Image (cartoon, rainbow, N blue to C red):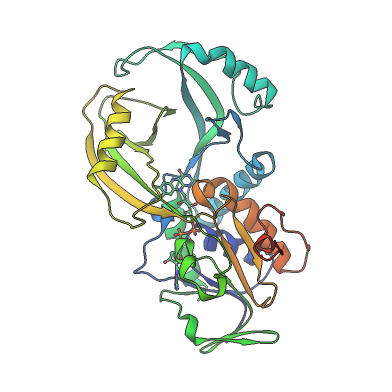
Length: 351
Ligand SMILES: Cc1cc2nc3c(=O)[nH]c(=O)nc-3n(C[C@H](O)[C@H](O)[C@H](O)COP(=O)(O)OP(=O)(O)OC[C@H]3O[C@@H](n4cnc5c(N)ncnc54)[C@H](O)[C@@H]3O)c2cc1C
């Protein structure tokens, strides 16, 4: 069987890339190991255009945000479900920092994403006190789990999905393509999330993954309709349910949930909301991240039949549509451009 591209992995990266390749009239076969966990099954799907710690725009947000909106709308239409939930996020601001926030908003050109003037003394009977908030107008969430699940069904309908582990040993490189069992393709693109660290073709890349955990809570009566962000975010997902996250750790990179992360999240939540939540679920995952926290996209210089789309880190929702479109156009020969910040070539330059 002949296809244009083999894609390994159907998390957010593989899903968005397969969709963009279809839009370029290309054929694909996706391999996805049903046993291996995915970060995309854990992610909250939060959209945050601002780096609160530095009060700057998130990297590439001006370019990536419009592409993000149109991609999730298009996928929603294709898959007949709402995937993109635009909304506001209220960032708690300490009162002594209000002037600094205002100044930084203008200095760093954040006005199109948030209100420069914080709202004072916003109250909710469950808040531990009356807080000042800065309102991020361009936020919201994407239902990543619904996207992955429904796109998997879509791929199956097209006979474009094999739910099995891909075995590197069985890949044969030809001068003008690859073969894998009964399949022949022009190129193979690995979208394996954190498993890419074990991929023998990408030994030169520097991964620095991080583990994250989050909670799904039922908090009856809280009635939040906006995301609230302080040391943790509290994201309403309907029916009195909220996602609260997330932790970051760089040691013990495994997919196990821990008591310490649960304690950390509940204690940070307790600083803003005084209510006893019911814990519905706790999830842990590994964010696929590069040493410089930028994605990695492109083809191997010595083996251009092999490519990668990875390193989405904690910004998968925002950045994956932008880079999936760029990479699909590159793979289809429409452009020769990959953003230098994300181009794989940075790992092959002489030091
Ligand atoms: C706790 C937590 C919260 C997060 N919250 C957010 C958030 O709010 N907003 C946001 O933007 N991002 C968030 N993220 C980050 C987000 O999850 C990632 O950026 C994104 O999901 C990465 O997608 P991916 O496709 O690269 O990897 P993954 O989702 O991990 O997918 C990789 C896929 O490759 C498959 N695979 C690997 N090797 C093989 C093989 N040999 N054969 C076959 N299949 C293979 C796996 O089975 C898997 O399906 C969060 C992450 C975590 C852990």
